[in-house]
Length: 469
Image: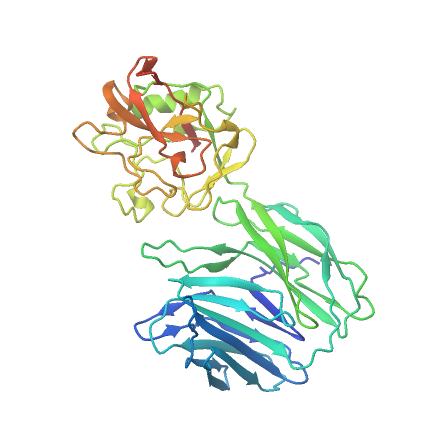
């Protein structure tokens, strides 16, 4: 029977005859006098007969070693402490306690050092090394563990298929798994699905965190023995409905409770049935469209409009417009409360109406989210005639844009062509470029605000990007 519990494991590291799983969000916090890795939790669920050694090394990005640094590992009942040597190396032997321990690792340098934190083990111990978090990029901490005897037969878990594609609330898929070689001991494999998230900050905090995906795996774990190691077993993976309208992307991880290290990934794509759509108009228009309302009518009447749904033009106006469309009222734009008659919804994936391909996601402010822009590849490279150009009115644009407001300069450098109503000779309205995956997607130049076919040999008619409401 399929279980309904949500699998919520995060980052995974595995070692010989036990597993080590990072079970909290990654975070590095530094103060004026130390580097605190207090939220790094390591769980050891099975020990070898000879005990476990937790080891690592510290070094600065400039090549100098992180010597004389206190390393502390604590559990509910025990505390282990050591100091890195003159080469930055450190090592702690854990006791042969047979009960699982949740361990906390912390490192305190003698001075303030911003850091990269890496988890990695030597060739005989692990196959994993990854950057977990960044604060300035000055210090590297490498943490590992090894079994003191190595009489283990290497083996691999074979997972059928390369990519897992799911749709929220619909039937999932079955995956078949088996081992390629007979293990020395029985091995249990636990499955998890998650993704990276990058909290939005203003001042250089690039700490990334793991977020569980809305996925259920049934059964949540499989056990292979010396007798059944080559017999295929199945897991069923299904995406559950959630409250947002985002397509989600992540990976499936597998950790082993015994045997040599096994770390397996499969990409996971979850399509959201509540995602919205958008399209570029087939027709091109002068900047004088009768204001925002007139632009919305042009979206409704365009031949690219889908058979159903309400679509509005992705344009901004100045704050003085009689009929406003505003994404942000301030430069900082701290929340969606600054939206006024805006066309994007928060936390939503926007797909092309023509083929369902995702173009971008929005954040909690209803603005395009960083690292999600996929654009309109079918618009091609923007040529001199601006074939893929569309009116936006944004005063400044990268993705995410530096400023989601219209240019309010009263001297004539406005970006909205008189709020999309009337002509403005020698003034440009901001244009996006549909085929551009850089900042130019939202603001890739300017179009003349005149109702003539060309001005100074440049085209004056451009498309609209129409957004489903």
